[in-house]
Length: 419
Image (cartoon, rainbow, N blue to C red):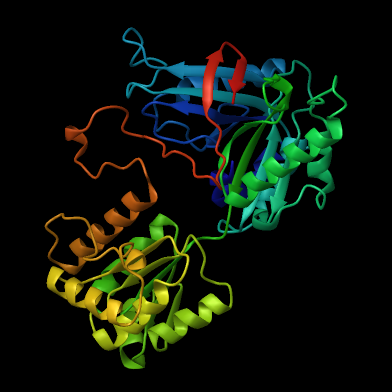
C-alpha cells in the first residue's frame, strides 16, 4: 500500500464518494514483477489506481474486486502460470501470486479507509509502516489497519491502536497459561520487523501453530538510506542523478567549494564543501551514518582518499567503494596497511569500483558502479548475464538475522500457511 502514497492524495476526494476495494499481494513466488505489499485500488465502475503485475493479471483482479464490492466478501485469489491459460488470467513469466482483496470505504467505521486517508496526508518519502490483520470474513467492516509513523523506533506499548490489533489475535498458548509471555514475544517480533524496514506477512500465532486469524501484513519503510559521494568530478556528476531513482538520499562532498558548487551537482539532496574525512567523522559522531549507508570515493587523490578510507573502514556501513585502477588499488592498500587499518577491514573495500561492463564514459561508469551496488545489497545476485543462469529471474535474498522476513511454505484455496 505504501507504494500508492504519491497518488493517494489526488484520489482521496473521489474515494470519499464511492466504494472501493484494495487488492494486495500477500504471497509471491517464482518470477513475478512486483513484491509482497504491492497494492491496487479498484473503485466502483472499474477505475483503477496502481498495478500488481505489469498487466498479467490486472483484468482478473479487477473483476474479483468488483465482485467483492457487490457481495462485501473479502477474498484471497491465487494467480499462476499454466500452459492452457498462459495468456488469459495468468503470469506468463511462470510465477505465482496470492492477492488479498478487501472491500472498503472512507467511512469512520472502516479501518482500512481510515488508514488510506492517513497515508494520503504524508509525503512520499516519509518513514511509515502499515500493519493490517488479514481477515477473510463475509460480513462488512473491513479488517484492522494501523498506520505507524517512524517505524524505526516503533513500540507496541507506545501505540494503543497497534496494541489493540495484537489483542484481537487469538491467544497463542491458551492451554499452558502462557498468554502474557506469548503476547510479549509476538509484540517483540512485530517491533523487530517494523524497525528493520521489511515488508511481509507474519504469522503471530506462536511456534508450531498456524492460525489464519493471526496473520498480519506488515509494510515498513524507513528513511531513505544515504549515499555519500566524495569527489566533485565528471564521474560523480553522472553517478549522483543516476543513484536517485534507486531510493538513496545522495550527498556530494568535496573539499573544494569551486568544484562542489557547480550547477551540475544540484540534483544531489545535499552538497557539502568540507574535507571528506572530517565530514564523515562528524556525520558518524552525530549518528547519521549507519549499516545502510553507502560510501563511494571518487576523488582519486591520495590526500583525500587515504584519510577518508581510513575513517570509513572503521565504521559499520553497507558498502564502501573507491574508484581507480588496479595499480591504484594496490598502492591504496599498502598505504592503508601502513596507517594501521586491519587487513580484514581493507578486504571489505570494493575497489576497483564497479562491475566489469567495459565502461568507459562517466555515464557508463555510473551504471557499472550502481550495478555493483545493487548486486552487493542483493545476496542472491549471481552477477552473470540472465541468459547464462537458470531458475527464477526475480529471486529473493535470504533474510538476514536482523530482518526476520517470513517465508511462505504452502498455499491451499483460501487458507495461507506461513512459517
